[in-house]
Image (cartoon, rainbow, N blue to C red; front, top):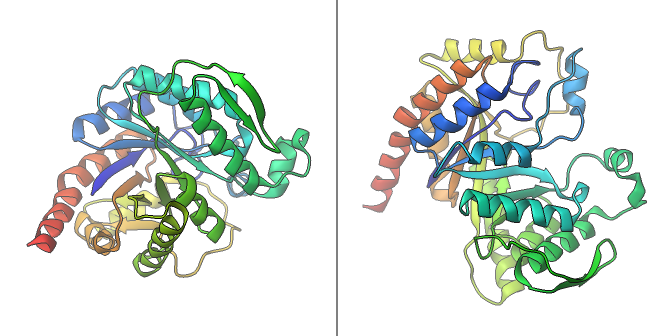
Length: 334
């Protein structure tokens, strides 16, 4: 099991107060995460204010581009990996994204994983990419991933699809990693089949253990169908966590992280498990249920009103929660 944490590049109004995140916060988190032994840092992407954030706050959040932020922080670190969780792939032209990611992978020494997703609503896609017309975003995902793989692999790359076409493109440098890992987020059958055909990992944010086990079984079946054999697929599960020495303090931290928020109008997903709040023992007990399911990486992303609060929770999680889970794993193998 690998343990990772998140950067607040696009989390104002979701896990952190509007106007709170700055360069110093992200630099401090990146350096501390490496020192504490976290496996990777996760960044996300919104191209404009996320609708639920716009509905709850009068002021707009600051959203820092994930790829530019990764490049800056990779220069400040030496070991820790960087994961986009996720970039909205249909908004990125494969030729440009190929160059950006390959450059990042070379300059970081092979520390990049690209997590991709379909993005928000179709209406938002049309608002931001009306130049593409009435596009099928699922087909775009297939073509864009295929095109990226070709560009990263071939000395003279050619591809002909409905949404992307190029011929005899010689694009260097190539990534250090072969292949460069691509993780995908989503729960629809089409997404799981796409992971089986084209991906290296699945990112989930919602499902409780029993439903995760069912989805992982589907992915494994689709892998055998698509590739004619069993093949490993990473299973990465992210959680939004408020961690403190008491349950009351954890709840207080939740409220302090989103001050002056109006009630959320977003529909709740019944039975899902996204937010954990409590003591290290309580959070470890909740996470322990995911160990036998097949999860290979847990990403703990912390609610916090400021950088100091985030750093304290990162250290508490590393010192108390991770060892408790590692001890559970050792017990399972005896």
